[in-house]
Amino acid sequence: MSFTDLKKKSKNRKELLQKQLEENNKRGSDTYKDDRQWYPERDDAGNGAGIIRFLPAPEGEDVMPFVQRFSHGFQGPGGGWFIENCPTTISNECPLCTRNSELWNTGVDANKDIARDRKRKLSYYANILVIKDPKTPENEGEVFIFRFGQQIFDVLQGAYAPEEDALGDTPEAVDPYDFWEGANFKLRIRKVKGQTNYQQSEFEDPSALFDGDDDALKQLWKREYSLQEFVGKDEFKSHEELTDRLNRVLGESTGNRASSAEEAAQKEADEEGPTNPEENNGSADEAATSEGEGGGDAFSKYKELLEDS
Image 1 (cartoon, one colour):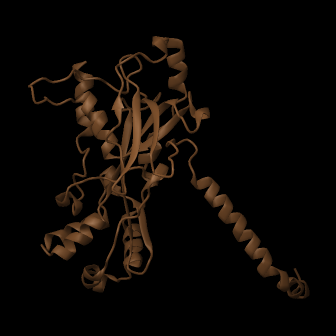
Image 2 (tube, one colour):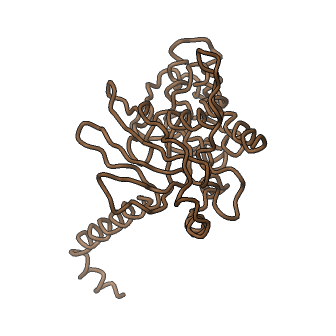
């Protein structure tokens, strides 16, 4: 392009750049939504429902039918967001978890509040078959990935690791992910005091999926999605990248980290709906550390069920 052509096009460049930006943003928003993931549509009151069946581990992957991933989401004092997967998921050090521990160990209530607000959140991923979707019936019979939090996981764990009740009886353990002896799950979503609540969700009685038809079950099994991509190494930034991002969100350098951290007023990102349907309900003591947040022994308890069966 000659200088003359460059000058002629200068008047239109702003308009062309704006149009290109809009196209890029549109493509970005379209690709951000993972159509493989399912979450029921909710009404204006925040209520929703559906019936799903949790599925076993997909072909070629580990015996575990779910994976778990930690993440952080909070807004810094300057308005910037820190929304990153936590490398403790794959047993690597997390700079934010380290800082949370430092803040918590000061014993100062204000610092503990900051650590609570920045704590990591736990999400689980599993394959499901949608049995009933009242708002979107075309989803019925389809396989999706379901992302869920601690409330729903507690119901699942209560099925395969039941506890003794007040009468001293312990219900029989059920593998909710099993094709033949599992059970459909009635997902009920309500808004309780402004928070998403799943406590009315429950399992139906155990029953074989597709009446135990092995051919149909095998075809269903082959339709499942890989879960390992959610915990692959490329899902987590390096320690250096996370540290740099954290410093920029907090508006601090390594030299003034402590003082600016004490002044920061953070809060977790509110990611309701399909991208983060539940808040993690970890205890206050767990907020500052990289341990706990519920589900820490999730894999071991499920493996115990398999070993006993």
